[in-house]
Length: 87
Length: 444
Image 1 (tube, each protein chain N blue to C red):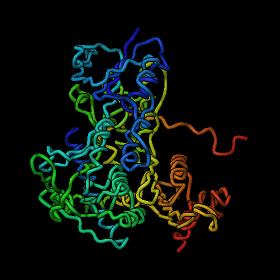
Image 2 (image 1 turned 30 degrees about the vertical axis):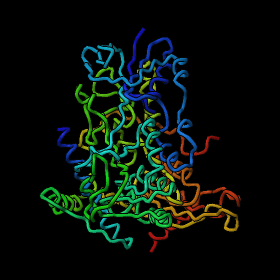
Image 3 (image 1 turned 45 degrees about the vertical axis):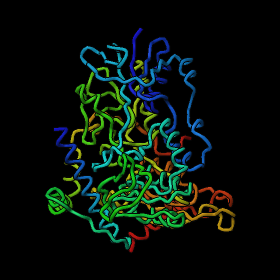
Image 4 (image 1 turned 90 degrees about the vertical axis):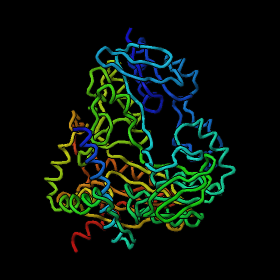
């Protein structure tokens, strides 16, 4: 599982960033042709990225959080005593 | 008397050893490091190369004698080759089997393999070890043309340093702008413009294909855009966790490749802690695991690991990752998500962008500051920020990290109070202007 999740995270991160960089570049008047070479590139750019983008954020967040990692261990949020001034 | 073994002598390892001694002074702490030195600032190396810092000696935090006086037993140039978590023993080259009560892994990072032919050539520089940096610094005196491979944070610092040194500097990256996995194009644009003024040649959307050489030494870099002659290639690929020792011992790793730890920096093995670039920790906004953070994160994690290994109690918190650096003639920085990363992950957000100034408009040395804020659309709570300016970026990044952490909204920031003093602050705070811009865009 760690090997698959590492492979998935590495490639998903890489191609989601590539697609976002292509779109953001366009918005900022930069030219960038995101390449999708080989079967892996085609799979992620043509299939994975479009499917990921149509999923609601709650579904995407659920999948991301389901991956193994430190975020699923015990992390205690520090309680805030007050939202107002001390005195 | 118990014995705690620390593997690694960087910021995390030395932070852990010091915290352990502070918690349990009577017990033994042994540090093994593969390198000749411990606890120096590798982050300062590019600035020595760029002649902004006069020598490497000033990068050391303490002398070797100081650690001896503190009771920290450091073994230099000593490699730990295996761990048995069941019997609580490590095998150390030249020392044999060494038992431990608690083990702290602070094994740091490696640069990602460029994955092309020619990586065995002389003339490829991986910035990490200070002794090698001292040797490379002499080599740089004779370098005419250098290629920096990948415009990562270190890449930006090395490009700036080499250009300052008068070396013809090229930077290649398969991505579309410098630091594009972290920063947005409008934030980096002034940096790139200032590089161009320094004579830096930028090659974006260009893929590395091969390091080319003759007689075992690099003579050029072959890319998708053609062959670039070079005397030196500085490899600044992504930092990946150096996890081999722990993985071989059965420690669990997360999707980033970093060791899985909890808020006390405990790993999946009983009595084993980990800290620094070899672990992953959760981002406080979005709860995603992240790895390969700054030296200050590594040191703080080391303190947590060392205190808890010594029987004390200290918790690490999810991170918000304020970052900043000097690149070209500018400072850039931010916290948590920028526009590009939020877009990549598909995180819904609204944005506010504004251009302000660092001092009163009439005061000498006044520089522009651009601030971009990202907020969650329903509550308008901040989820990230990016900035570029002439000064005051670090302080704003630290402040905005606390703002993200505590749930501050665009509305809060739009009416924030600010210091007004002509030499240090303008009438209008750029953060407030960006928040006001974000709120105004929602009304349109």
